[in-house]
Amino acid sequence: MRMNRAPATVVICCGTPKNVRAADFPLFKDVTGLADVPVTWVCRRDVMAAALDAAGGAAGHEVALELNAMQLACRPALRRELAAARDLAGGPTSAVAAGMPCLDHRALLVEHGIQTLAVGGFAQAGRSSRRPPPAGWQCRSVVWGLWEVQTVPRPPRPAMAWMLAGLGGPRLAPGSLTVVHVDPATIGDRQAKLDLERLVHWIGRQRSGVRAVRLGDLPQLLRSGGQPESGSILRQAA
Image 1 (spheres, rainbow, N blue to C red):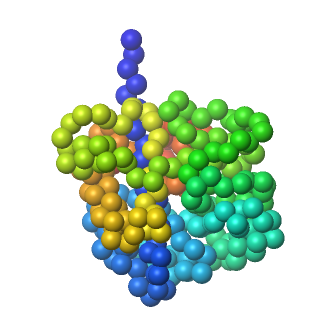
Image 2 (image 1 turned 60 degrees about the horizontal axis):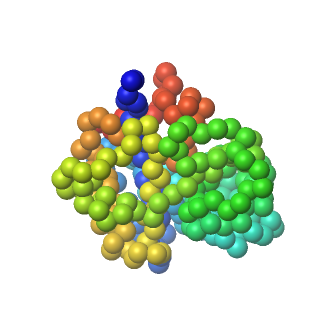
């Protein structure tokens, strides 16, 4: 039997602190540069310009737009938010929303350049994914041009223990996708920073079997069935 030797793919999405100031990003300052691991920073549109400046010097990082359930459910509000974000440095291609929001306006997301939307869970779509995702990837494409991916809030505590302490036990399935959403709004700034540091350090220590990518890299990776294409910006964590 041929074994699946494809690496497990991990995406780290990290929100900014709840009361973040435009000129002060403690998570960026303390964690960026600790290891050569890409992070997708999830920011409200009003602090996105400062986030782009803060992350600009870190190779491989990206900034995704934070959307809430009310914005996603209201077409005029969503259009305003997307249009304002698009004016910033060309606009984001990824967005993140907590929970299981109503997604009635997917075409509007595509219209404004969003190619990847991370959500906490999938509501009933009414029709199946137009494009089959790789096995072990919790994602779907209900409309052309947009991939929805399911996040986990952070690895469960038993998993966190073996991931961070290297104690053996269960492993990420080869070829699987895990999108972790570290959200200071739900777990607090201090715990979010701790989780982020541990995840970055753990991924940075892996020599094989785990590949860290940005949320915005997933459409390209999905086009190749979960495998990196020749010349791709994707890399396996060293």
